Each structure stands twice: as C-alpha cells, then as structure tokens.
Amino acid sequence: MTTPSDADARSREPLVLNPYDWDFHEDPYPTYRRLREEAPVYYNAELDFYALSRHRDVLEAFKDWETFSNRGGVALENTTDDVASVYFILAMDPPRHHAMRGIIRKVFTPRRVAQLEAPLRRLCRQYIAAFPTDGAADFIEAFAGRIPMDIISEMIGVPDCDRDMIRSWANTLIERVDGSPRIPAAAIDASINLLGYFGTMVGERRRGTAAHDDLTTAVLDAELDGERLQDADVVSFLFLMSVAGNETTAKLLANMLYWADRNRPQWARVQGDPAMIPRWVEETLRYDNSTQILYRTTTRAITLHGVSIPADKKVALLVGAANRDERVFLDPDRYDLGRDCKDSLSFGKGVHFCLGAALARLEGHICMDELFKAYRDFEVRHDGLSRVHSSNVRGFKHFPVVLHRR
Image 1 (tube, rainbow, N blue to C red):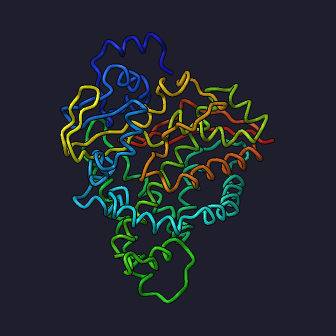
Image 2: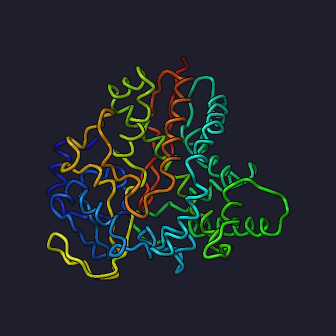
Image 3: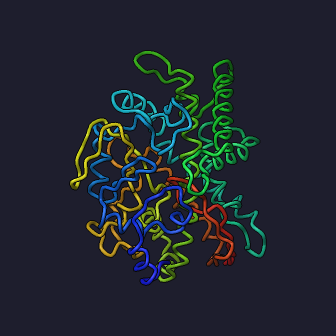
C-alpha cells in the first residue's frame, strides 16, 4: 500500500491520468484522490479525453444518457468503426437500447440466474477437487479464471471443448501495451477470432434442427418490432457476454482474496460467519472494482466545475474514484465488511445498469462459499502476483496461493 511519504511525493508531481500506464494499474487510488480534490473535471490533452472522478458527477453522468452517450462504446480506444459489433447494447442509446435490452432482460431473468446456482456449485467442487494436495496453485488459472467463462459458456451454449479457446481470446483482447493507446495486434486478432467463432455458431444454429435451451436460442427466437434480430446483433451479444461476463467476475474473485489477506481482521469476520460472504463481495466491489473506468461520448457541450467539455468528446467515468469518494463513504480507503455499500457505482446506474450484476454477485458468493467449505484459510504468495494491464479492467493475471484444508 502507499505510505504517507509516497503520497506526499506524488502530490508534488504533475497530475496525470493515463489509463494505459502500468504504474497507474498497480495503485490508481492516490491519483483518484488527487483528481477528486484538484481536478474533478480533468482533461488529458495527449489522449484527448475528459474524466469525472467525484461520486455525484459520475452518478449523474450514468443517469444522463442524453448528454453522456454510449454511441461510441465504453472504451477509450475502438477496434472498429462499428462499435456496436463488439459492445452491443453498451454502444447504443434509447430507443434502440431499450428495445434490445428488453429482449435480453427477458432471457436474463432472475429465474435463469437462480437456476445457475446448482451447476455453479458443481463446477466449484470440480475445480476444488483438482487442486494439488498441498493446496499450492495459481488461483486465477485453477479456479477464478475458469468458472465465470464456464458459466457464461453454459448459458450461451459453447461446448466444453471450445471453452479454453474462448477464454484465451477473451483474456487476450483486453491486454494493452504500457503507456500506449495502440491496440496490440494480438488483441485485434482475438477480437476477430471471437466474432468469427460466434458468427459460425449463429449460422449453424440458424440452419440446424436440434433444439437448444440456452440464451443463444432465446435471442435468436426473439423479435423486435415483429422481426427476428439480425445475425450481427446476436453475434455482438455473444461477444459481449463472453468478454464482460468473464473478465470482471474472475478479477472480482481474486480481488476478494487479495484484500482479505491485506485486512486479516476483516477476513476473520468471514471465517467466523459465512453469512458475511455477500458483504465481502459488496465491499470488494466498492473498494477495488474490476471495472474501473467506463467511457461516454458527449452529445452537447456541458460545463462542470467551471470546465467546459465540448460536444463529441470522450469522457471517462472513473468508477474506482467515485467508489472511494469521501463525500459519500466514511473513511473510504478503509476495507470494512460492515459498510453499507448501497451507494456503490460498481455496476453503473441508469439505463445501462449492468444486466449481469445478479450473476456476478451469485458467482462471488457461491465460489467463496464452496472454496471455504473445503479450505479453512489461505496464504497469498505476493512475490508471484502479476496484474492484467488493461485500460479499464483492474485485477490479477497470476495469483499464486496456498490453501489450507479443513
């Protein structure tokens, strides 16, 4: 963690927000703190984007889709001119967004999510049974990085034999080069591969006669204004599911262990009462959310805190900064499982509130419940930790642990 002397040194440095900088990925929170105090509306001239860091401003921007539009997608960089082909409803505004979201909501119901608990528990037990007898493993590779993609694959109908391949592509496409907005060739290739895979899958479903009870079939059968969705819309939906539903939850699980290890009195509360696990999920989401930044594009000029933001500019909504805003959260840099997290913005707000929020919470709860039915405690091998380097996702790529059996 940052020491007071480190913080003082940083405060004397020029205030720079570079979402591609690897040092920023290691600990963005001192930068967020300075942004909230010194530049609540920040402008990066080199990368040509604005950033909002205070909770109220981020919340209002989430809610004001008419000014802060999703038409340009949720990332600073774009892999294609047709951003909806990869972001689906995340690159749409109402009324088209409402119509598409209505279709997805019908197939992403609480009933369907609740039905995933039993297969989720089976998957957890399967991977836990495969852990080495000494309990030493890479938590990401052996558990956290596998289960979310398996669940998403089960939901959309990806066969077992293809899931490692889909997982690898999804992981690759979010990685970025240090300090550079350029999208790496490997990420572009991974995006193309995913779109191609799902394009083939949709084509086969259209031509096939076998019945499938999954989300892909439900979306293929859905109608918008009396007509079936175009194949391109279904493909972009599957693309979004495979990326958004995988990375963020995998990172959440490792972040939960990391902060429990760094705050052992809080971990003791979970050990003493498994009913604390949902609170563990919620406080981790607030304290160190997987999705740190979501971008919008202004549709008109707007002035905030005396700063004029022109129309057609990218604006970074700093979720990670808003969730540590002392104007809303008492002692926000303290990790506290007893905290009321109702004002957390981890899943957004407004029309784009995350459809997968209930699933992410379920996965966090069930995965940790099953893990610590089998294990009583854990050690994090800090010297082996390494982070994913992404412009908006925060979490670990490698997370070596030793788990101690009951």
